[in-house]
Length: 428
Image (cartoon, rainbow, N blue to C red; front, side, top):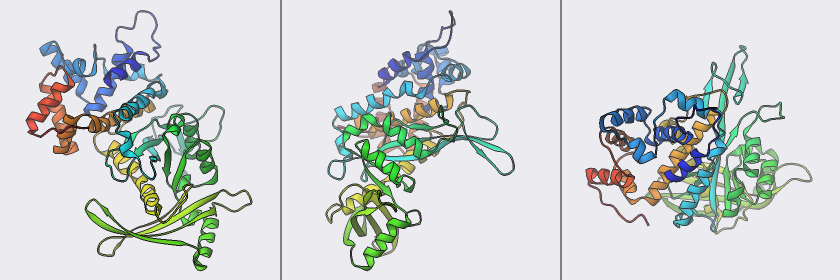
């Protein structure tokens, strides 16, 4: 995957003129990526020191970097680069998972691939800004500037591994005077970034913001299915139908016990098919379900409702609800991990004047994706990560890369396997 990443970085647009091109663009891009992959802001500096001591370094052997640029050089040369320049890496990586036969392990609900959509902020400031910033005007006259995106992530109710896909950035659009928003961004994602995934037999998961007729229709017209959270306070007409049906005994009821993470839960579900999502003659009919979940002590641990285009039956209502609830994985396993567990998505690594902020966010997503794919495809990586907590793993990785040189990734992982004295099982 590093080789393909190098290929993409080699094709990045270079605005330098004349002979001022001593450092190749692929070294610029790979250097930025290496910082996020190793979760070490000092990785490049350490590799410069190693290169002085030994005449070689891990930046070269592991990341194919021929010359290590300065941090300012990286920021200045990456600022004009659109994030879409590296988007093909997402598709290439997903194809690696698919070709290895591992993508089928994520399927759920009659062979559906679940893609959780969620808006996430990754930059906010009252001082720094650029033309791509969203703005919020406060009553005191101050202005907050921010960057955010709609993330798309393959999830599964039974797996802690998630696979980030190409995002859609929420930023001012050419020809539009209004602020960009999450709903507009999801519509763009469906037309462009999400188009290749429509052939994967996929269902989109989203919060209550997505549970509106325009978004649902766009999802269906894009050859996707949907399961969206549906709150009573924001869907007055739909829940009037539900309340009326409940009084007349028109709701179906299913109760089922589910074992999750060695704990037993009781799912009490109601559902009905073909109810209008809103008032009006041209209202879209959707299928509705709700659940109250109790633990083994009969304590309520969850309650919520969903709408979907999947036909709901006694046999699949629990699976539909579990799929809908899996949307939280994009907040916990994805957004929370990116912000609070080493990737520092919300940290300002560089804002720039054009695309730097969104490009660096994209590289962080890619580094996370590479780590998740290694859990699927690399038996040694999986063994060590299974033995060491996430934080400790990357602490050890940073330390060992500072003191020792490794000619290959295989040599690095073999060293960590031996140091941890873990057994390596076939990842297949």
